[in-house]
Image 1: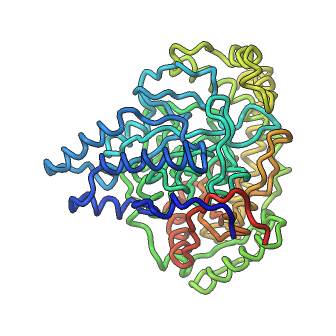
Image 2 (image 1 turned 180 degrees about the vertical axis):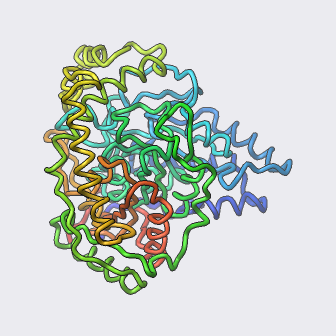
Length: 509
């Protein structure tokens, strides 16, 4: 149940429209890309800027309408670039675009910087006919700034609100991408993840999130945290839409060596199967089942549903707890951030007032009144104090973290039990936003797949007092086809996705 709902959501012509539905309308001439862009821009004005004031879109693309018009002319001339031709998509504001938009990671320190070229995935999206509608707000620096941060807040963008209850947190760091997709402000969005930054906000905003295998999607031109864990991925209202986006952004890129094993031109939408659970061997990761009794009950119902659809459930399947690798993961992130951010700034932050991590720390201190009103920059200073990637501390931490997550974790469980995938709740429902004390975790299953660099998909599992919760499906490297098939079968059997009511707060029922 929810209170204080907005009627704006009820009248929107394209509420809950899928990419396939929008494409069909454009194909038969009932809808133009330009008209769709204008509709989403008006929706953003009504929902994001006014009305509930979600504050999820940090910047609109001033050329979106013109680009859409050009794509309309291409279609009328008999040339459609593919299934995403004319589809408006939002990008997280840590993905570089060489246009009139900025790429700031939410930081005032990058305001005014001009990217010399598009990120690799942006090049792929534009070539596929996607209209880049704008950039989304995020937890500043992808939530790698403070040990006591509030997700969804950035110095440039302010605080993003959860559309299901405005006083609840979006989680992060892909906060704006998740909230905007949930609120029907675009057809879909692209987020990024190092550990939980796609799947956590997706689950708490009632949408689908795909964190691909590290190396399936190029990280070129994306503000980094850690090259061993970073990846971009789709965020959408349906699994089919996520599959359509992944089909476009996935593939090898000469600028990202990790993508050398990525397959080219895979149409993930062709692998979706409503009967995809039948015969699948699925392990229940009890170690990561959250403590909330109502979420546990919903998860039990999800397991029962999978059984009824022909899945073989192995319960429990033991996995190492996060304590076995969490300390090592942080050390890896600190070392890799220092190296990665300095390289990114050198190439992509032309015209910015900073050129290094050290200068970023100094900038934040000088602009403390705007940048550090709510929390500090402990992680940045810790990273600056670390050595290089040749240090023994880094090499040992990386080896221990990956061994715990891979050989002793996901790979071992998959092999021993001959599993297709592992499942657990993605986490608890959204917590109350608290700019004084910072985030309050309600649990999650993101870290093991993140540290391993393995794929992870979250799909809506239901709601608790009107707040969404998600089901996580995880497997070994390059398992995206299986995960999408399982997620699609579960989604189609349950149809748990519900649009938000823009409540002021959740009703505790």
